Image (cartoon, rainbow over all chains, first blue to last red; front, side, top):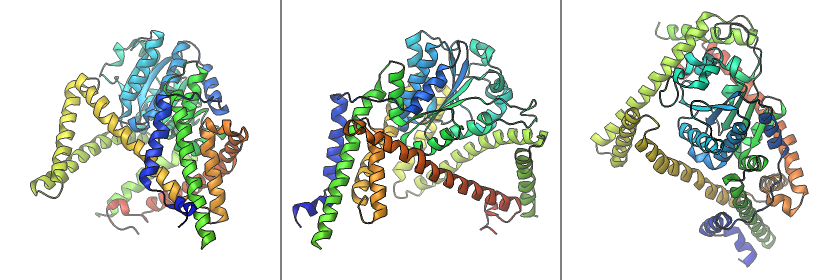
Length: 287
Length: 206
């Protein structure tokens, strides 16, 4: 076996060590690679930018801490953008472990703009079953959700006086989406216009509420189809989208910091793939 | 009647939910009632999950099966965190501390470990064994470089090609898969509706 053929059998431990170094070093010593803002992220930013002071949006934390590195930065960035426009936020949680992530993201963004819990934002916590509570909240949010994550009833949360139903009072849905359940529920029950009157929809709910989705990288391929077809109004794609959003609001943070590591990590994987193929072609030629 | 009754209930329930949505006719009060039942059923399902977990792991501990210590840890964690959450609420100091310093790092670590498996798997499996494999390899590398800022630094054309791959061939394939899955879903629903699919009754199907 010559040196070229050996590239086909690199010890997995070497791959792991190279990966650790290639990811850790740029986090410790930033390389500051330039980040170009994509059309998708700019589009999502523009959609959020259309909100007016006093509007109320729902931000759904449909992820758990495992997806935090990709979805926490856009959550904070979008919340900052909304608060900068005096938009109020209702934190919702499609995933049981997402409640604390949403609370932390909104607290961090609120601190920058002097926003107050209960007046400018609240966190609902985890409400099951998702589909049924969303359907009910379309016409009666107070009846469907009743209280926030701390058990404080809506009577004692001043901003909820202006939010009686999704149908009348919600101006946008923003979903931090790591899978299912998540954006799908909002698309099905809120984002899709329906003219069917009924107990859950007495007047024939015809208004389409914009849905902006920030998704993890593995979801991008499916999310692109939803964006192109207009199901999603805006898309913040993956960790890179979060970094781009941070740049758009002039508040670079952890999302931008992670992009150097993503670059070098991807480069390391590509180099190993190339080396493996060199070894494969060399062994085929000698055989 | 043990089989017929569940089938009749399934048929009526599916019809009540399906017809108003598809044929755009007025929803009935029954649909709203089913929604409320669903809320109750979900709560019962969570309770059943806790009871089932307790039974399975309780049995492991009683019979000292292999790994019974892990079952003890599982049960203690389940009930301790549950009681703590009820006592302190989700915003409690200790509850949040455990979430921030145990649950979150563990969850993030497990997700992060995936990168090593993916890198190792990509290295071993991405070989140019055929023309199709070569196309897959090149497309994969371009998309990887597109999602990282480094791609544009190497060559400004990389993000444009990567975007084309994601916007055109990828989206076309995703839509085709989505349509196929949806049609399959409809077929499965009609089978359940007509009683041809009986897996949910505990049997082996038609």
